[in-house]
Image (cartoon, one colour):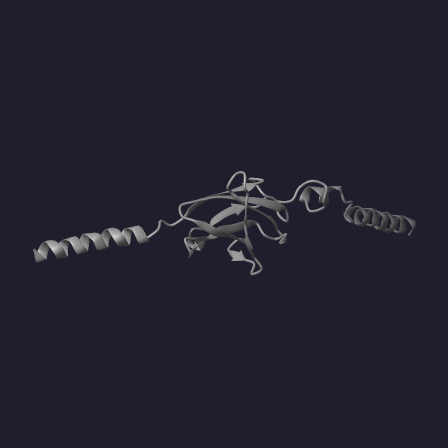
Length: 166
């Protein structure tokens, strides 16, 4: 009888503890545009599930190779009432950055979950167009090589003329 009572208590304790432990939230993040450009505005959309979500924070770091700038973003995301997704727009500020790292910190059932160890990384494209940040625009700028070339021809002609006169 004692063994049955102890076994029952152990089994009930196991079930009670499994009910108290909640599942860790899961998420999926999409970016718009999907191929972001340096120093542009990116819209992050997160689809979060599992648990009672009370707050979602977005962490974004701009990086150049293996170095990440210290002034990253730690912002609260807003829940879209119609879609149930969390959204936030971020304006990138570092023109030298060539990628971003981002992840979520989620408060679910009163517990904070930081997903920094499973951060996502996205390469940034170079700026394009007519905003002056593109390397292709440098081909339109006249160089000083032409001036040096013309001056060297003038000096050469002057030296040749001086030798003929003597």
